[in-house]
Length: 412
Image: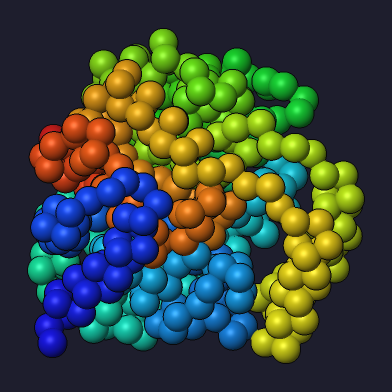
């Protein structure tokens, strides 16, 4: 059986389960949906899975489960969900805005980038590094998984923007200036102390210029609205929201309102819909669960330095917390409410998928990438065309990368 045939069989199994939940289909229509999902280049723009690549005992080539080890992406589940790949994230948490903090974050980011490269190099028949828009289709035609690289939180660059070029040479093609808190580049949407700069800092403006010069897509997810507006205004190429939602469905600082979304669209930008539950809807608070997880996180330290046995013990403690204080999750319908509203405002040429896998994403009935065909099935049922779906799953972000690279080339 060919790689494509095996993948299609996996998707057929996934859809046979999902169709019982979403809508009734005749066997012929179901088969057509499966075949169509398989035919597209299917990408997610925010895969936090590189955080697991450095975790002792985790093997991306082997099947895992959310219940087993909380992971959401591996090759068997990518096959089952028809996920061809996407943007694999170099993530560094926000630390002190000091030289010492910059150095520590830089080292962490470099190790994370190296982990992505090691994943590709160790599995050359499964993964391939992508740096240009045309690479995506070429890689899928070979039956391999697409590995573009992005950076969530530019904090590791410190105040030395030449480091952006270093990461570019390592394959970086997307960068977001901030994460949960303000940093040297500008304001976060969720800093408890509020804004510091009124958008981008002067260094943040230089980051926009440098990214444009290199052909790197700028990512406004996690950014304060004023930072996003500034990036839209200053960037010579369209901006992406790699994993965001809409305030019209749930008014959370991490989401975007319709007015700003329209500005993003008018500038050519794209929003990719997030599946992070607490950004989708109001979830009930559980102080005991929060306290238990807080105590667990204090014990964690650097998970990359733990033994496999220590990691297993840590996960057992986490499972115990979940058993004693069960999580209340957002639903697939909560997720689709955001998706459908965004499509109504932005249109299918400016919408995509960035569920935040292995970074907190996941909703009931769609807790890992094996369930991604649910989205295709639902959007087809809502009347969106096969051309629309092809744009949503891959063409839109590839257009942004093409525009970014064309601009950089025009400067030479």
